[in-house]
Each structure stands twice: as structure tokens, then as C-alpha cells.
Amino acid sequence: MFLTTSSILILVLVPLVGFLAAKWLFQKDTEIEDRRRGAAKLAAVLQTYGLKKTPEFLIDYSVGDYSGMAHKIADLSRLFLDGEEHVVKEFQQVFDRVLEAKLRSEEGRAYIAAKLSETAKPAGTQPSLTTPSPVKPAVA
Image (cartoon, rainbow, N blue to C red):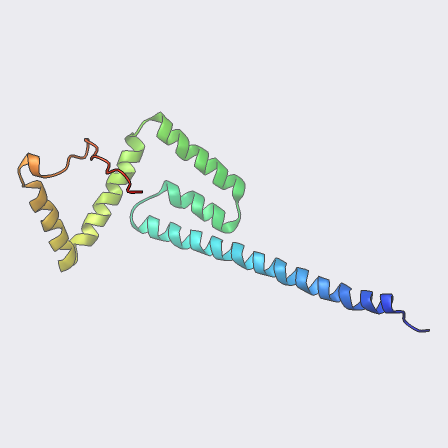
């Protein structure tokens, strides 16, 4: 029995297409795993700074628990809609942790001292946080 040209071509193309498809799928899987690893690392860093709610849904994403992630995002949005007390409390914890970290180094203490000296200037010399600064027109 002799093989025709078309059957030889099919015998060559089928494994080649299968190999290329498998390679593409593994590459996509690696990209997803890298994103999940990144989310887990980010969650760990945010936790060290005192955030609690954001790392929870990042951890759910990192393990592939998308329904848990969606529920936690909904809970977080409810916290924002219910009022800012919870949010301000969490950010206060973050501020305290960052301040503690800055106070541990000489560079951090110098940074805080510089910021404190800026606040000691007369009121008219520093920009206000509540008043927007003027926007400069774009040069064409």
C-alpha cells in the first residue's frame, strides 16, 4: 500500500498543528500563572502595610476563586457606599505602618522632617489640598 501525497501531508500537518496548539496553550497558562503569582505577592505587600480588604480578593484571584473574589469586591464596594468610616480606619492603619517604617531609617526621618518644615511655612506659600491648582494649557 502506497501513501498518496495528500495522506503524507495530513500525517505531517496533524502533529505539527497539535504541537503548535499545545505550545500556545501552555504559554497562555504560564501568563495566567504569572499574573496570579503577582497578585499573591501584591496581596502580601499590601497586608504588611495594614490593608485588609484589598488583599483578600487578590488572594482569591491568585488561587482561582473567582466567585469568592466577586463577593469580596461586592463587600468592599458596600463598605465604600455605607460610609467612609471603615475606609478611613483602614487607611489610618496604613498611615501608621508607613510612618513607623519611615521613622526607622535616617532617610525616612529626614523626609518627615522636610514635610513638617513645609507645613510650618506661612499659609500663602504652599498649595492647598482642597483648592485645585491651575491647569496649564497644552502646547500644540
